[in-house]
Amino acid sequence: MRHFFVINPHSFRTLSSLKRILIDLESCFSVGRRMEYKIYISRHSRDAVAAVHRYLISVPSDETVRVYAVGGDGILFDCLNGMVDFPNAELTSVPYGSANDFVRAFGEDAKMAFRDIKKLSFAPSRPMDIIRCGASYALLAVNIGLVGKTVINANEILRHGGKDWIRSHTSKIYSLCGARTIMDKEILHQHYTIFVDGKDMSGNYCNIHIANTACDGGEFVPSPYSIPDDGELEAIFMRSRSRLDTLKIIGDRNNGRFGKHKFFESCKCKTMEIYSDTPLCAQMDGESFYARELKIEIVPNGVKIFAPEEMKFTDYSYRAYSKESKVKN
Image (cartoon, rainbow, N blue to C red; front, side, top):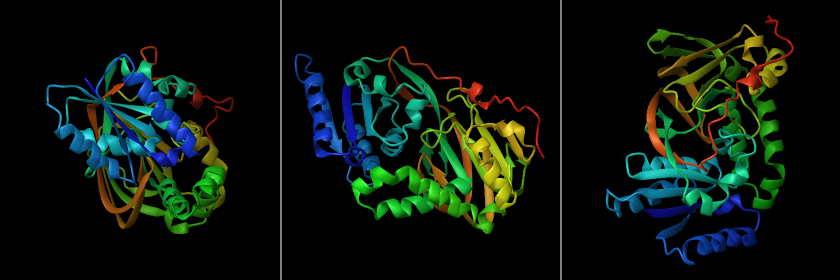
């Protein structure tokens, strides 16, 4: 077995904190154990996709390679897309990002367990579904509309900010960009042609959330009934409303309480095709982009992931419960 560590240096506040990770790796793999490992420092977004692919090509196909994404969900996305065609590869996250939504699938307090690299190296692997969206793959979710445009706007600001400034104000930036996006009438009332498992669900929506896991956005649980190994996606459609109505119910959307409002619609599905005459504002696992059409489908058992033995996928359905059970208009 080989171990390949892909590190996003931008996930660390200081150079000293990054050095501590490197020292930890050295102590885990070089002292006494002599296990083969390699470290790659990612230079920019999507750089690690090719790096992981190159490394896996160099390894015999009958030898297991464990890929460790050290950072946040962005570097995890890159690693997944570099290894998805290699059945001998296994994936995990060593969470140092701002959201770490993949790790939250194992519980709100799972972060520290996944930072124990020595324990991770011995952890059992298990299959997990993934999402195919166009030519790319995601572990978590695809958002189209309000959330997609918010991430596009926020990423534009974050790319031009200093590292320390970003770290201090990331959540505020996303909040401000969300408020700005709600003012965008075109996004709130965009028309989509949609086929869900062949069923026509076309209409005007302000957001479409297609989830493989429950968590999104670092603190939110917008799809609490989603389980990442059940062979299905959870789709949540938020119908177009006024700006004021959207502001009123965005908190319920973020916490999966869509059953309170009749202009939400949800369903389990395996495939979805989406078209629009105006560009789709989309994001998948934090990666934002524009498109005219998308085909989204579940890939059952699409990747092997490894996690501490006691860590199981968490049932977040309790987060959708509310004292206020009456459906609103």
